[in-house]
Length: 577
Image 1 (cartoon, rainbow, N blue to C red):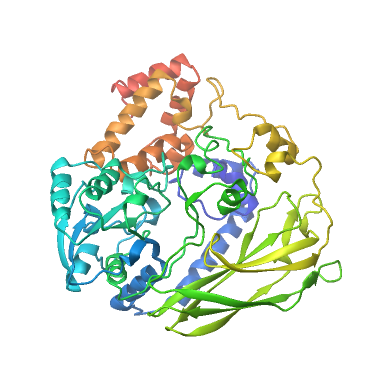
Image 2 (cartoon, rainbow, N blue to C red; image 1 turned 90 degrees about the vertical axis):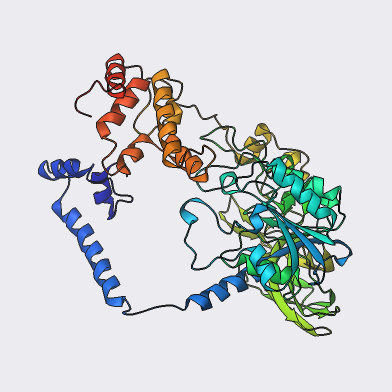
């Protein structure tokens, strides 16, 4: 909220978060001077009161919920979403009679959710260590590293010694809270060095390694060829420990699939040279080539592809059927529908679920389109030997692209291919069909070669050619141009502002127990440094006066009088603080 008066006029009823009355005088003066009508305020008040009365009327009295039932639901969700990335020589599932060395602080103090506003208090919390013990597994546990990701030589050495005498070793690694959170970007795609070193060192003394990942996003895996299995539990919620134990010991067959590709390194991403360069401007030079759309067409090998996920059983695909060999879309018939069917059979020895994926690709010629795109998926549960027919329905949007000239979804005429697979790379069945679309060619002239055949990263000039405009680099404000909408970080070159930032940093670190790498410290610092100073005033509940932040801005703008007052304030020289 920058202008409460204009907000009332525009019908904005609620100021979130509250500014604790910062705009009250402005609103009062606007009414008295005739710039704002009382009726504008009354309408907002009336809408808020109606919402309050409606909420009270619909509030259920004595309502409750069953805690254990919700915990079991959390466990079911964790089980369904866990992804078995690798399982060489079917090292999983484990047997309860095997001697297992369990390594990693995350096995006990699990990371089950994200940080920032997503953080909630669980009703129960299950660790992998305790869950494995409760099902009767024979395990020896070693913390191996500090929970914040820092190395501990003594703990690492104990884990290595313990791994020497185990039948199999389960290493629980991932990203600590401080590595990924709301409020600040990840600095890289690597795991903590202590986690990578744990895998490398244990691999030197034991060949039977299973890695359990607990992360909220993809990570680089330099040790991938030194381990036999990788189970990705993601951030699996409060029952993730129980779910992990059930999958490791085969009580439940994993069936999750990756919702994003896992590149080998961050540099392989189409956007790796774009983000984090300019704090105010990100140019989407990659256009449609995001994720598997880029890796496939650019010929870049990934660690694990989009849609990937293994099982303790095997599935056979057969009998792909298209109910037509030609689809026609025109002005009179934009909603043509076709059916695609195939059969999936469980040819293994245990029951399990498979996610059947349908992709559509334009196979006419090389053009400004992805090789194929996901257009449907279906999860089917099958007993050993059981077979089921899966049906997909495709419509115009399944074949369409957005046309920037007609400002509508158009279909390019040509030969298309229907792909059925277990992942974007593991295609089991395919069939071609002829599509008579709404356009005969793409509406672009002189498409830069990169967008036809992407190799490496696109250039700015190439993107400008398809964007249709010259993109001017964002110019950061300079001294003399700062306003209350700038951030502390924007003004950090000023020596006095640097002192203020150091003071803020010290105070925030102290309030979080003195740990500079504490996730709450990093989150709060990022918010304070990168939030417009007017927001700091609004959200401070009156502890940060507007007049003080106005002095900060004027100081950064080179106002000597403001600088003098600010220094006096910082050194306790102002009575009215």
